[in-house]
Length: 216
Image (tube, rainbow, N blue to C red; front, side, top):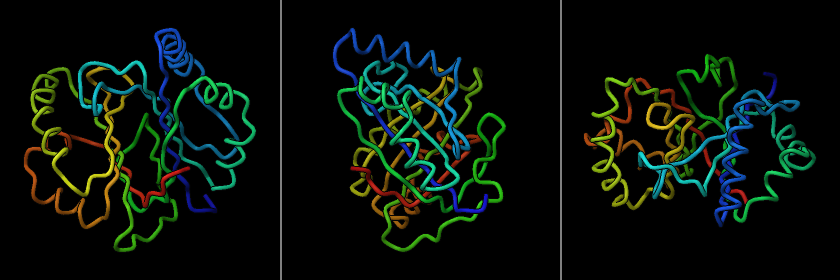
């Protein structure tokens, strides 16, 4: 890619059973008809877990959308003009999210190395950092994984530098991803080096990190 890639994350919430049922149907449609647009390198429409998202129980009110773009301009054009996006967005009752410049990444998603060969941004001390960690959980390890979830979740809730967290996924129980936004890279590094209770989340992950900016 000639330009540095650009990452967008959006969350949508639907209120009421009728609206949530339609949102659930849109999730199934996305599996059959993946998102595509000029400049869109990769996109996923994801369900979420109940509460903070770290749960075996789904949250039928909230869905996420993750996109990797060839440029900021490509993303802006899509959000401003794409009819399918406009229809989906208009059906929701609430929207929030982040835009990010990637600073590092490893692993793949559906065989796609999202940042391979890309020009990456420099991380400046004090920048807010968003981290998307994805893991495919083997059925043989699923019980152990979910057994550790409550402890990890409680610990994260006590961290003052964690600004946001939500568990999302493609398939219940075994195709999981976690988005977290941190006050700084320094705070994230302290977690990585000092908290043993979160290690089960890191089994064979694909991780993308970027400086985050809250979208209005």
